[in-house]
Length: 189
Image 1 (tube, rainbow, N blue to C red):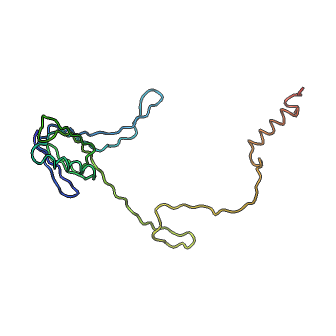
Image 2: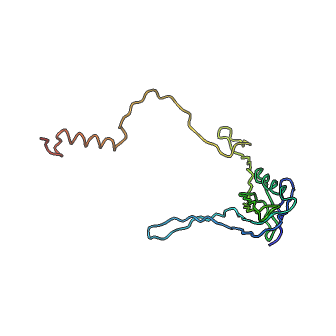
Image 3: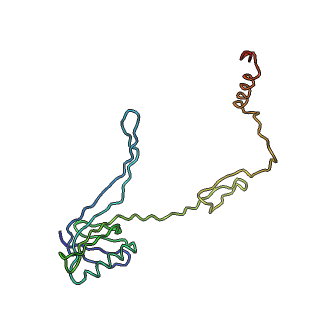
């Protein structure tokens, strides 16, 4: 295929990959499936997975040792990269790096490299204006999430009672009917 370049978006450093034999961009999607009674499936959500790009090739010559050291450092330091080859990919990180050192490439190495798309999000801080229920004036700078709770009060010692619980009253009445020989149940005997 030819030469390709990798450039760090962190420090601007760039290396040239002498021979890239394969670029295989992978565009994957997660689709949720839920089976229903009649045997069919219902899909209710589709989400895009980060794009990954497996690349393989050869680096040879005088600068090969420096290039492998740079690739390893970029991986370890999690640099964001721009790849320029048959395709161009920006904001990618090295998710896998494999090298082969054999007699076929005496002054360098073969490599398999996987780049994965990096999505960076930044948290947003929102200032809310609310009305204080006591003062009925706008108050600035309140957090986005608030809770309301009733103040606790001491009720002393409380004993359980089934008053107001008709289901519990029914269970007790049924037990009394069963064992007290109530006429509705017949005589126990």
